[in-house]
Image (cartoon, rainbow, N blue to C red):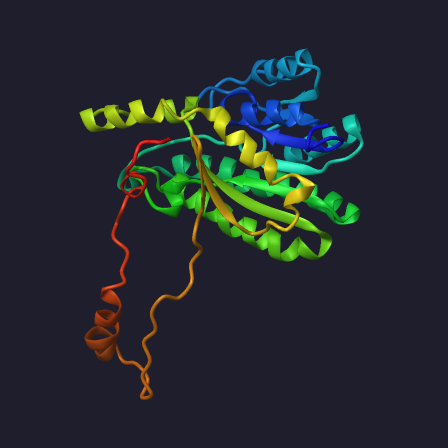
Length: 303
């Protein structure tokens, strides 16, 4: 008996990489899986049922139950179809893993509106679309679990990813709101920042020698390593875990901090612009966070 025996799990972006690993392991743990992937190229062109069906075929060959879905998470009507397919095929829905994603990397002052919108539409709006579609069913059965993929690009920072970082930080706020709003219905919502080499990560430009060396490190981070902790959060044994932000990098699992006040400035007279400049800002300066990148914070090789 697997730890997800009898549960129905939707995994978006499950045609390859992290999502595929999660879908296959979910099936090994006894879940029936809706494998969602629209099968497009990195640049968003094309579209094929092949990647989703290939994951389904592998799950079935191993004795599991799964069905392929090629509806887009980025549009509200099609996202509802993903959830409806789970209900039509398996009769219920117990968990959603929001993993579908894309990239349109460019430095902020050159980023176009289309590049910004394309990434926010898939990551943030897509996460909302699928989660909101599942929410009424979770509410009525008084159970359910969401896991959403965030990123240290937003939590910490990276070059050339303003669109991606904004979407991923938006997902953090969305996840916390879901956790707060739906906890009374025994529904929980958590985030994971995955570190893994995938087709999407492989598309990041590596023009400098430093970037090429970083890519070599990225290539050692296995996408399948994200699955165990993701699925642990979907088990009944993790019902008390809610509103948290985690990270997974090879054999490392992290719990991230969340914003809380760390310094306070007070004056009985009330603040003026001048007093803020002279007193408040200097009081805070020693506690300012540097403009670090994700690689600065995670400076050691994955283990």
